[in-house]
Length: 231
Length: 407
Image 1: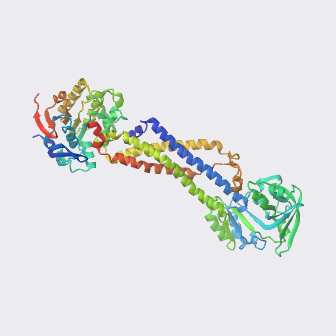
Image 2: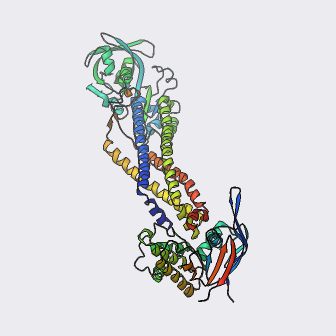
Image 3: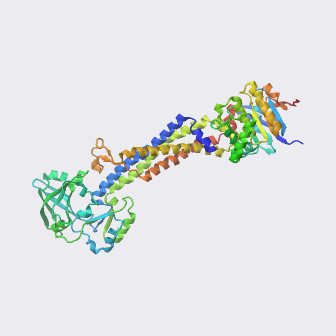
């Protein structure tokens, strides 16, 4: 029997813009099992990012329940959410993904340091994971000295280095060329297979969707398709 | 890691950080420098006042302050062993007995009212200005020295000169005229013209002989270790001279006392005014730094950094900037005060200041407590000023901070 990594029940999110109310998410019900490699797809404004924000504890739902690794996010305080993000969730953003004043290795170590892992262990784990994502020799470079693809690899390394239950990636290939995009997606697939970490990736790129094991389609804040992809 | 990020963030915008550091350094330099000059000026005024016969503490016979005549004399010291013991202690740096009476001095051409002061020339040397102010002739050699010491201005007004004879008149205890001719043996010059015209000095035994009085004295003046800290010495003096009227220089010269109090308040106001100017720059710099890093702060919050750590990170950045600025400001102050420690010639702009006891050479006086206070004001208020931008940064909602990235 598979464990549930993420569960959303009757999830609604309404954004207020002056007098206007915009339903970003309406009645989302979804269950994502541990170890899945899931793509959220849909056009701009469909609610992909909003759903990822909810699952990552970066934003709160207007109504409904949301659980990650069995913990209810919608009832947590800001400090508790920060703690959950630190220990259970890895993030890969579209851009501005790294702390510019830290080197690649320090960026990877950052989360581990917040977790209180001792320096020698931090260091060896960071070097190992950077090697795993193909960045050996670039550990001491700062983000500005790395290409876009290399920066995203550092971000992926940081997201998985402390073995989170869940990695959330929002349009991770949006700023990459197709070759780098494929490389990054292959890397994440490999990590998903080898570590069993659950990946949720939002995208509207068909080339990215082809890497998904499960494809959830959103439109106007509703789930309009949910299919397993056979390979 | 938080300290490392804060430190590196400080140098992300070199120009802005350097401008802010320069502002802090110059602010601290201004605080220390101006305070050193003001303290030096006040020290000179106080020193001048203390040396102009007041000393730190004065002992008089009861009634003398209201009527400074020959009727009110203190008994000889040998009749007060407790006072003798106190005067011989380490707490008293110098002391001297004086016989002071109103008198009239007359030359061939003019007559002036003065205060005749009989002094012990040896004891007086370390206590008042007289010995070091003789510019013509010589200082008194002993308590029985028969010559007079007059101020330059008084000599000019009497239209007389060194070695000429003048006549002194006063009243003896029986209210009879006591009169005698003296030779002018020395002329003294001071910053204050009023001092030059007010006093005439002679050996104390010579004055006693003139006035036909015994071994009593009008006053005993003494110097303690520190003019600002006289409470203990005052208490002991009052105890040792229980029947006498004991006053500190602050009580004898209330004008100087008020200047001292005003100056202390002025220093604090000066510090705060400079800091206020500084704080706008500091808060603005930090607000800009926080604003520019909105998305970055959102990112590190998304990664799990707690709001309290973000507040700490911005504060560390601010404290690092303040400490570097303070260090530079203190070094700058030291480097600029050191070359002028022997005095700054302000004669070109300070004409007339001698009337309030300030000489034409201004000696900067750096007081440890002023330096500590300048640094403490900048550091403590600087941290307080940084709390607002730091708090703003820590209260950012992650999703709002990184919205621009995610959508």
